[in-house]
Image 1 (cartoon, rainbow, N blue to C red):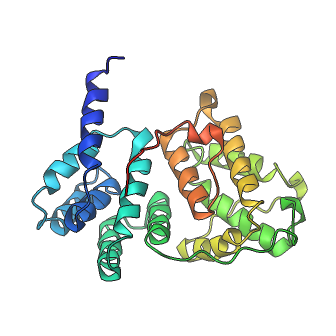
Image 2: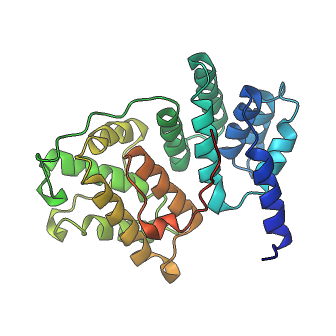
Length: 265
């Protein structure tokens, strides 16, 4: 099957990125993948952070050829390679990422998810999961746990389904209504960054069988409240990042938004 020019450019860029293994190139490529291309301030920080990498501009150009369907899969593989490097190198990458993301004040919601996801990919251990026998139904979770589920869902509503405040509220109500009656759904109050981290600690420790149920509720609600029953790229990315933090497989409706890369580490 013949490719369009854009598809060929992406294919060639992915072929080159698949061969990136060195510390400097990995550092530059990972930072490029979390740099908003429309932000001059972020690009200036990226330039400063990668000035010692001779191939940095080529890597940035290659990443600019990537579609939304491959950007997150590419980032995940490159982070898996970076995890094989010594701890000081991993710490330096996280510090550089913080400087890059600090160009947006307050921090963009998707940047915070990227930051937490990067820490997990680079070695942060998730909280210990509760035993499966403790709870086998989201609706039967203790009120304190349900509140933290609501807070994470509220934070995601800043990105899902990705249109406006009314759509965000509709998605939040639809998602929470998948396992709670309307009168029991807490108000949609997105937490700040520290509040998100605290809420995620509780949600990440849910029994392993409940986490995919929650992700499924988020995705089904997003499709139900999205235009043309398809997720915008930003909403899909937020849900993929959240599913990764919960160590949950992606529902097929979310998985099909992406092209998984069969790269070796």
